[in-house]
Image 1 (cartoon, rainbow, N blue to C red):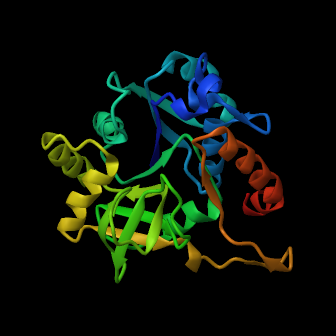
Image 2 (image 1 turned 180 degrees about the vertical axis):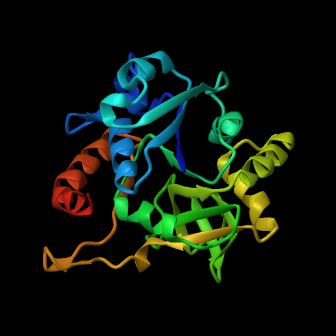
Length: 252
């Protein structure tokens, strides 16, 4: 299985940090965000990656190369419309992916147990989204699910009972749903998922159901993740990484 990582955007809310480097290369505790995503994904047993680049994409290629330094295999594809929404970036990768794949964002740091749970999910839907039960914050993508099926998803939906973590298990059929949405000038990834949901073809994986008790640590360690959009988020992410460093080692 391959993992598709979206790393095309600039990250405007990080201001001066992304003037000369893409958001994916911003360091968190000395390691570029995208390297953290790759290394965490490897802990779930995935070693092949497709990275969608855009803004200053050559710098990402220069930093990661073919992936050998990370013990991975990396292919790249460029989204020349990187200023537009993330659905276009996902659809750009269609020509390089013809089997089920993991989908993540280069600016999301997460617990490897979430990916392992997604991989163990036996749902046959075209997309399975890892969701959290946290109360949504401004900017979060909200999700309404019933009986494990996604009913609606988006930043501005009125009714919701969970939020999007930015981690997905997809089949190639998701590209058809995205294409259908983009033909209607709806270019967000969530727009494609809405199309899948209308066919009852989009499901959830609830990360709050992951067994969080560590016998080695003799305490509960809840699955964690963070979406880094601002400098404040970056500070929070570094604290979260430090707090959960032992957990990450336990998952290796």
